[in-house]
Image 1 (cartoon, helix red, strand yellow):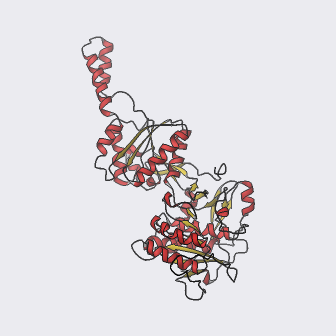
Image 2: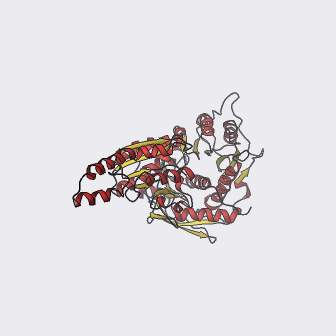
Length: 466
């Protein structure tokens, strides 16, 4: 499929990303060295200055024939030789994705997005070599060994955490770093860097936003699942670190079967209901006007007293999210006084159809650059892209920028962990020495008409990671 050029003119100082379809290539306005000096993220959305309109056909190699002079893996074990420089001065980067098997639609979308970035950003020395993992650890290991035998200097992918665990020893033995698409933080470290949207980053930024609004007391209502536990772990870390107080941590069954009882307990509904009945009983025997007016007012209430939190984090989606949210006012938690917080699971249309969700806030990638990517993907491939497809674009764009940077070893840990970070279609991101990633999200608010951006994503990281 022929791809149209996709160039972005980026003004890093202002943090603006504007799409420019067609036309002459736009040179990068801030070279990597200047970006590091200024603290601004290096844009991955600029074509190189000498970029021609169409790249040679061999820049994207699918299937990899026998013309690459592969170096066979060491018998009985992973490769132990580090890749030697390409004889033709090419920069070879491997993309590992599930191109067959149940997850092949996602793998193909990652490859499609990677191809977009290849044509948009890479120079003519850059070669992207795609390998099928089949979505299994065994397939990923075989793909990684083939990629390394073909001289890959960096591995992008794989998609699943089990695959990343499986290939880590092979890549480590070869001295090659991995930028994985997973959201599992446990795979990070050594030579594995995690590009996916980490839940702890989402929680960190939501707590920071809530604290900036003056909220101090926090509760979390989470599913009893790996995801829910990861959210609670981050919640318990970042609320105190931000000067807030954790007042309630509540788990419910992952299928939502006990949500009613859990929310009732979270709301302290029975205690507050008993307090109401006690006050009504005390006033019932009094005949003075003030007591009778007070009794009339209490008769219109369900409970008395406030809950002990002014923000509650609901890290779920779909029917369980709306069920949890609607139970809050049912048990007399006033959403006008308690701020609802979400994660990126909320980044779906139609939340505002449930009135209690209106006013809730959640993190998301910056809307303009993200929207441009998905609109153009649909134009090129005739179908909507899954959300993770943007990782395929940003990963290849990152590799292409590093390949033409000023580091002696462009894919070294030092280059990948540049503290100023990078700016892609999903906003700014940077990798920490421990392999985890940090991101800058926009803050979205649920309205009846849809979500609206109430706080723009940051354009820079304020300070280097500690």
